[in-house]
Length: 439
Ligand code: HEM
Ligand code: HEM
Ligand code: SF4
Ligand code: SF4
Image (cartoon, rainbow, N blue to C red):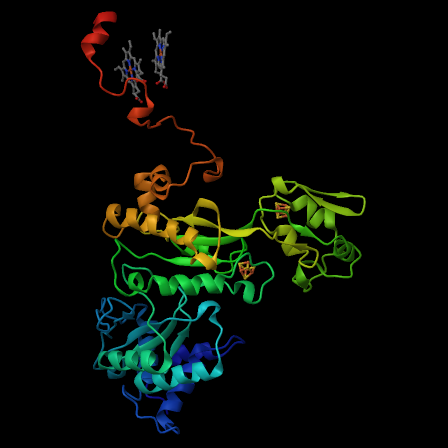
């Protein structure tokens, strides 16, 4: 018999999609029976009370968590999101209900053994409920009490060799697409770079030193499977600068219908026979492809590497071999001054593990040097760029302005010149002017 009546939540147990309500009920039951004989360190009925308070929120149409909450572990300035219920007498199981962010492996590959050990800690010291994963990438342990935080941290670090993730005004947990581990489009090893930089900047991640939050994300190609261009202050997107590799025999196999276009992604509906002219050549945004007899041709110097043709014919077309990444900066959600996606800063940067990715870290650190000094309190990088100007961003990173930095040139004429660019400078004497122009 459930602790609280949950008629509204119960409705969410029907339908084909996996029901979070059914899962919570299952976990509540597992805790109540405790067949594994776990020494629970927080209330056994935490999940029942979570369902209770959620049901109450469904009735009221408003949240029942108090404002904020500042908890954590010694040595770190972030990693735990404190939270307290505003009806602690009614729902004592969730009077404390803190969230622990746990650093996830790049690409989110796991072994069952590792996940089991994680859950052994969490079943005993937390609610047993998780979010796999938070939007930023972390493994999320959902709900525990303050006294358990150091205990969990001790076990994670000493037994599982695992650290916390980031929260607060600091470098948050970096995340990446699966990259070259399982994708032939990947232009660099996203897992390796994400892991390396996460380790390199542990201090910046665990101890807030920034004007505001800062996020890294790593996409292996412009398809953007981790959406770095929209969800990270610094977005690293793989690309290449030589030619697309064409296998003409495979092109013929696509034309002849032997290979389904787009890896069969549109098989659920009859779109007719594959038409390379209509589905690839005519859709190329720069119109740089054509058929010459039976040969597919690409004018690579006009190709903007949009991925369309490669996505359509993955067995015939491959990314080039001279690969690297582009760095885009400033993506953020709307608050305060409007949403932004990343703007292209470095069109092509070498990715070289041999020299510890020096070309990449140089750009990161020059941006931090600037933003950490100039950024206002709670001002994202994207907002600083708008306030101080993209020109300033180029100056501090030492990147030369070129046409690829704009989608179009400015149309207003409010152009600033530096004084030394203007013959004679700004110091002028009106008397000198009056010699030639009477009042
Ligand atoms: C060789 C003679 C002239 C030159 C070189 C000249 C130059 C200019 C320039 C550079 C502007 C600013 C344009 C802008 O940045 O938007 C301007 C605007 C203007 N000029 Fe002249 N001008 C001349 C003659 C005149 C005369 C004779 C009149 C009136 C009797 C006049 C009236 C105006 C007005 C009202 C504006 C403002 C227009 C606006 O803001 O929409 N100009 N002129
Ligand atoms: C009540 C009368 C007037 C009003 C309300 C007025 C209004 C304006 C406005 C709104 C501007 C544009 C300012 C800007 O956007 O930067 C302007 C510019 C200008 N006005 Fe007037 N104006 C008046 C009288 C005059 C007269 C009598 C003259 C010349 C005989 C004149 C000549 C100009 C010129 C040359 C400019 C361009 C200045 C520049 O671009 O730097 N205005 N005026
Ligand atoms: S972003 Fe590109 S490289 Fe990464 S998984 Fe997606 S398609 Fe593959
Ligand atoms: S990658 Fe895009 S721009 Fe380049 S040839 Fe293919 S479709 Fe055209």
